[in-house]
Structure formats: C-alpha cells, structure tokens
Length: 101
Image (tube, one colour):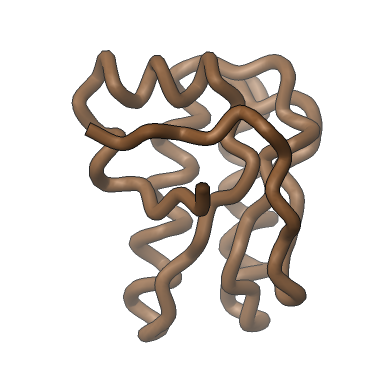
C-alpha cells in the first residue's frame, strides 16, 4: 500500500498540470492534452490544482503513465489529492501510480 503525501511537493522541470477538474465530462480532452505533453517529453504531472475529480481521473492518470512508459520514461505523479489517493486505494490501483512523496 502506498502512503501518499498530502503536503505539496516541488515539481520536476518537465511537468504539466491537470487543472482543477478531471471528471468524466473532461476526461477525453484532458487525456488528449496530456498525451500531447508526454509526446513532447513531459515526465511529470502536477495534480496540485485538482479539486474536482471522479474515477475518470484515475483512468486518465493510468493512461498517461502507460503512454510515458511506452516512450521509455516513467511519468511521475506529484501532489496527488488525498481524496484521489483514497479512491486509487479503494479501486486497488494505487500501486500502479508512480507518485512522488
């Protein structure tokens, strides 16, 4: 089981942000935008602004991680909100996320 940090973590240089909302309604656009950033070499995603989310956010984070891994570079997730961390644990996917503590 992962212990997710609740205090903001400094972000790596090649980072993109999730924005404040990542729900079913915004997942398709967020996925595409993140994939473009990963394709351009992003190695981390900052979730600090994320305040409204549902399980779609987990699906998007996992898809971004798969895309980064396919490029040969893991994607670091920083500042994962506690609620999303709990949701990941409830679904049993917390160990699939590369979260920086």
